[in-house]
Length: 94
Image (cartoon, rainbow, N blue to C red; front, side, top):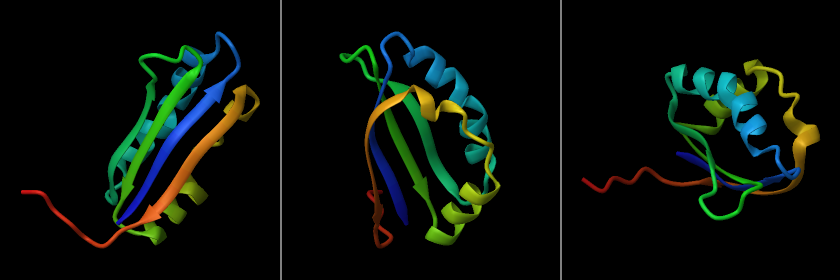
């Protein structure tokens, strides 16, 4: 299992535009059979920050999505990013 998680800071006043611009990627990821979680959400305290959370079944699935995913023109809105990728063994909390 692959987890991608972290924070992205955007230019002042651009958080809503960043989230709106991310919707195609969110929809595409959630439609992918190997994506369990994909979220781009506003931080509840920091006005110019979004939180990223993704969960994929494998690195191959994530790589395939990134290769075929929608083009992202949001890079110019980003001022800082602290996003990490983690590979985990299968675990459940049932």
